[in-house]
Image 1: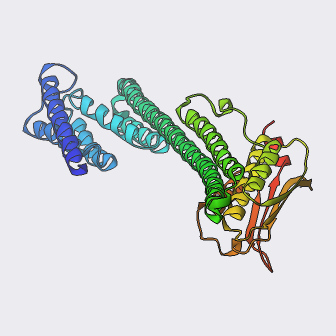
Image 2 (image 1 turned 180 degrees about the horizontal axis):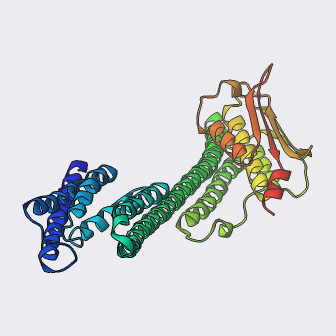
Image 3 (image 1 turned 180 degrees about the vertical axis):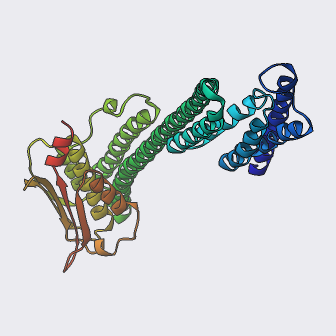
Length: 387
């Protein structure tokens, strides 16, 4: 691809050099000061156009080749206007492809050399030198202006592309964060609800199979009613989550997030599943994101305790309190199987929620029995960041 582009550029420059040679030939026999070229003159005039084929690849080399040819051509007093177009194109190329310092140096060198060559022609030569110098400066200024313009345009395009890439990356990051948030919500919702349904179904099955002749219809009915309530609650939360997926509005319009006020409902649900839950909440109003994170952490910890506790008299202690500018969430249980629970997305989801608000989480088996979850969720940084 690059080679094809270079070939195309070379072809364009060759056509330009040929066109300038034809123009110079017409000028040489039509008008201008100086005598008509003879065989030597035609050779010099046509030869000085050949290096223009490489003008964009090596402008300074072409300049160094053409200046002696042009100087010798003028010293023979051939038509002085004929090589002007080729000279101007070369000077333009030097300016448009080089730096400002190089352009100024070349301009001063060319004008100085011309003054030396014209010095022997008296005042007429000086006047002609100033006229030609004007053209030289004009071409150098034009080339320099276009070079700066191209650089500014390229810089603007690069900045625009970089800004577009940044916007695309930000959009992809937000999509990824939203997908992760939805995945966490679905996991927390379904894992909690399915666990409670499983526990209550086991209770109903136990009541039905324990002593069919002395069937406790009230206990069975209560277990089935609890299962129905859990299904309705899960269906409502699932509908809310799906509405968020279909909503094109901003995140602030998603509706209220669950917070510390909903913790008693979680405790009551776990008690209905057979666990003894001790809940202590000693915290005032906290940022919505922190409250939601605390709610989901307690929800997941209770779900794991009920699922893997392994004992009928399971006790779970939930403590939430503020201390040193942070919300501390502690959930411990005395279960038999919590410490050997199979790995899943629960702990991963809790860590991601804690990390999303800048907090820390520790979770693992207790020394003697049971499992402990401890989270520290900072408050001040989020409050200050939202101002």
